[in-house]
Length: 408
Image (cartoon, rainbow, N blue to C red):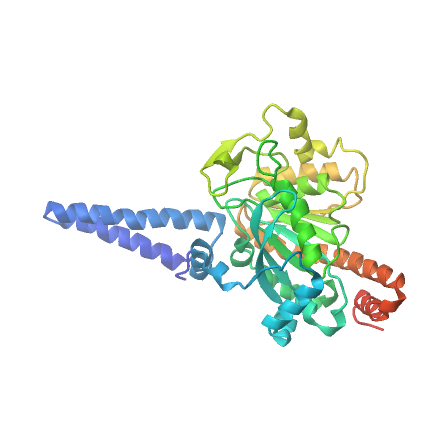
């Protein structure tokens, strides 16, 4: 009742504001009238902020808000630093030394790491969630599929945890479908909440698309026991992250097998980039493609899709909130274009607008749609690899067992 979106909290603010106004009216000394008037601004201001928060349905709990705004949630997530180039064998040994494997086999393991892109030269924090199956004996030789999740703007990877409730939603899904387990990767796509880079490669500046679409997958595939980028990788995002998803998978079709777009848009908006392309610089608004219409076309999915050479598109899944007409129209139009190339393109319309409640409601269905096809690709790849390497018979048996859901 008294959480950030609770009725009690709004009533409390109204009562406080009303009481201060009464004090202004009844106070006889000017100094107290001025004091009461100044104090009245506080509940009025908080009421406005709370109303915006409720409209976008962002923070539902004080804990989530405090964790996000103060960075406390980040501080509680363990960090993993890669030694030298790193390898999946070394990673599994390192993780085994610092975690409770019995507990991780039940709830999974969330950690953060820092990636410096070999191509982009950008350095960003990335969250990684290993599902419980990663620590279970039956999956000891299995290379997992991956879903890369892109946040909106303003935002950061923490929003997937605090606002969208990713981990409990995913664990609930895995209880019913354990063989669909995938590693979840949440990169910082903007380098700060004050920026809006839109995962674009600025011809004269930051190479954000290269970081998200190439550097992060290459790093994860090298360090963690997962499939290489390809049909066993998925990409998904909401709002700005939805635009990033559509744009990246069209330009990097070999990197991903499935794409999920929640309340996304399909043409670039003006970007907010750090002045001088320096991390932490003052945000300035720029048109990344000013004077380059050909490059703008390539980065406009709703146009580029109609002109790209024929290649195998990844599977697409779309969602939007029914009260945001622009989101619904954009998703419906993009679906229409996709259906010229794909047999099926699910479109989920969820009650709400361009807000957190829509993305929370869409998250479960999106994961339920994406994870089975990625798991099928991963199991097939593992089985094919094992068939060409008879010495790894145990790995072959694991792949067959996972592909059949544990049945023999």
